[in-house]
Length: 143
Image (tube, rainbow, N blue to C red):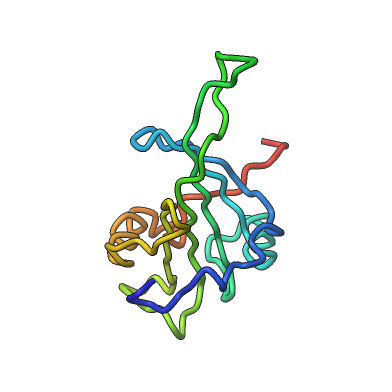
């Protein structure tokens, strides 16, 4: 992101992260997979309210379509965006949240950093201040 220096290289191994949750954004008609690096996964698994330094949480947003063989169901269709947040209190202290935010939007030629910068991310995540600015809680099979 232009205003914080975070790049896609920071999460190049995200495909090896573990899925912790799924969300469906009705306003965007988008299915989101939420993944966590090992540091964040362990904290979420333990039910920690505050994520430790080095935590990385990745959101991958997909458009949806009806499943051809089962039209009553939806499935992921086209990749729309990849977003992530990294906990680094030394580098990121915007409004006291200690998270660096990044959003890459899929284009015809690859990915483009979101032009609204991190202030747009912070304005939404402020609603989750009591949960260390995370909307996500780990979804467990035992729930």
